[in-house]
Length: 121
Image (cartoon, rainbow, N blue to C red; front, top):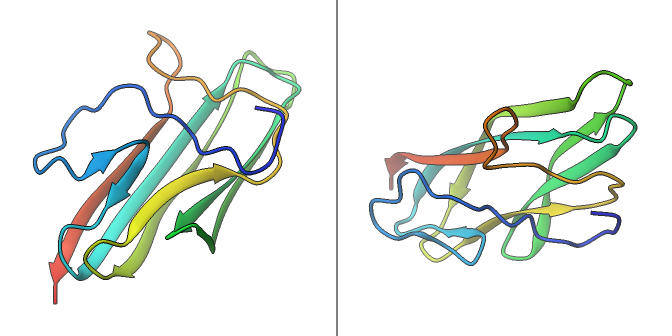
């Protein structure tokens, strides 16, 4: 990823009980409070990953920047993002300026986006 505005493509779904995740985005099935966690890994040690959580195509202000330090790999996490969503709101993760490649689905390196409904309203 060496550009801005690229939506992260997530490879494997582990659990998607209601088929709310499709086309690399989560669509809220009901109005409520949601939690999201983001973890990214890259094997490019000199890379910089700048990622943002987007809601309905616009940045939310929740940003993760990971800067390589020359070690075997780089990784970073955005532990918990709490958001109020209306049914049909769409959440995605988009690059804002990155020079690295987000890795996933490997035995040693993984990247993931997790989300859950905390309470419906």
